[in-house]
Image (cartoon, rainbow, N blue to C red; front, side, top):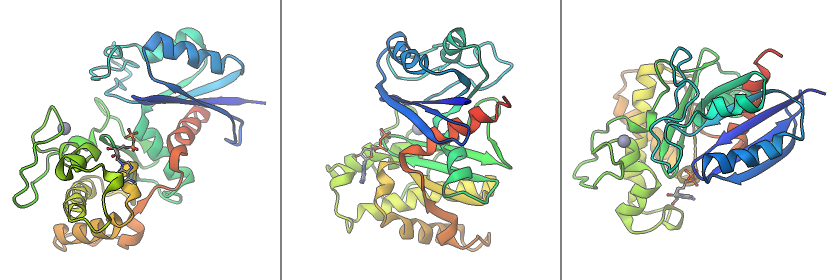
Length: 287
Ligand code: ADP
Ligand code: ZN
């Protein structure tokens, strides 16, 4: 039996899983993200029980995905204590001499959703998570999108909603999507955590406006077949029709979009998109 491993490395937890050739998950564990040596020791404890063929890693970032770079496989300038400039992939390779796929957590989720979830039957789609931050991954013509680095779709600049003076929650940018529309921005706007806000609150109009503005940019630059939205904030399902409506309005009729109900959709794999994406990428290592 061939086993494939997956590591979905997040800033608060690492989800590790083992699956068989059919990508049926046989075992999984969620480990708190503490310091690298400590967390990795637990990761090794988990996987050492299996003879893995390949491993897929989807990591929080920023990470170095450029194979020609000296720091390929590193987590680079993350604010996460203890994880700056850590040779994450290198440490995994020291322990396991098997093929490994390496990408961002959101690229892995995009890949999982495209093959097995909301993006089935497409070749190009975007996955955006709106939670503590905003992160986006893209699959273009069947491949996860990476260039000199990986996309950082949460940090594109926004034109502000009329009279919106909210101080951005992003320490780097005065008016990026994450700074104005992630969970912490919602809370700052209203004084209430997103999950406790009324569905009829006015803030959802502003939220939908910013998300739609971002979706317009992704649409115009990448022309995906589908945009898949996930993360805690997107549990507010009333956002979907508002986003679609605002997207249509902001595009001003310039591009004729696919049916919007099928173009802007929720994720289908829930907590499994990243894990399944990593497993698929592991399996595709060709062994
Ligand atoms: P993370 O991004 O840390 O992986 P989440 O996707 O759950 O985790 O995002 C957490 C953020 O999303 C918090 O700011 C929280 O207030 C907000 N959030 C979580 N659930 C909801 C919800 N049902 N409605 C609105 N906001 C939510
Ligand atoms: Zn930013």
